[in-house]
Length: 185
Image 1: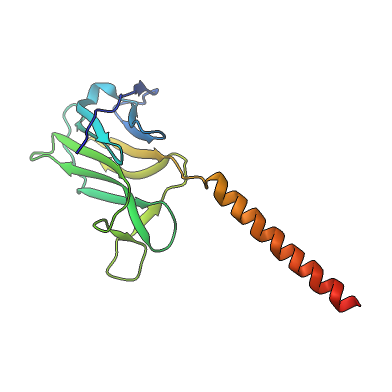
Image 2: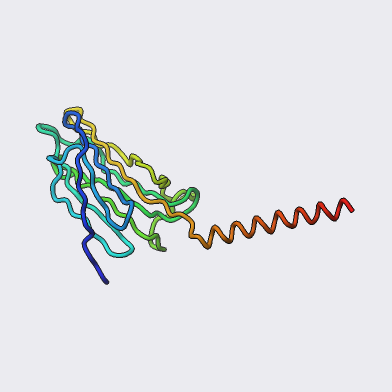
């Protein structure tokens, strides 16, 4: 399998206290990470291949705190209703709670991925909408609350799809006009 490391963009947002906001941006074929607390991130690793992208990082506890959050796993689908999961964000708590491993994965859905938003058994997933979305929050013993977010690109219809839609609508309008003209004569 062909693999390559995606260029990584890392930016800093204004910070409030020890709280961190981590944003995984998946708007192109490159995943980037934006955070308000770069001093709390370690082991940042992003990469992928032409159909799958990922970023993993360790989020250190604020000074003197330990994690009081449960592990998290949140899936996102590209459309509402029954559909295959396309993005996944999870957080695993390290033994002792001194840091949390956060993983973001974006992939082309396939038959081995979770079915979202379907009758049981199913995974409840959010729906990607192209805006910044909050996946979950992590709580620490000192009251700090970190926010884990992502932003994924939303697939837009191809030009051929628009052409097909427009020609179908034109056909329906023409049929309606012809039926109305025949009924008047």
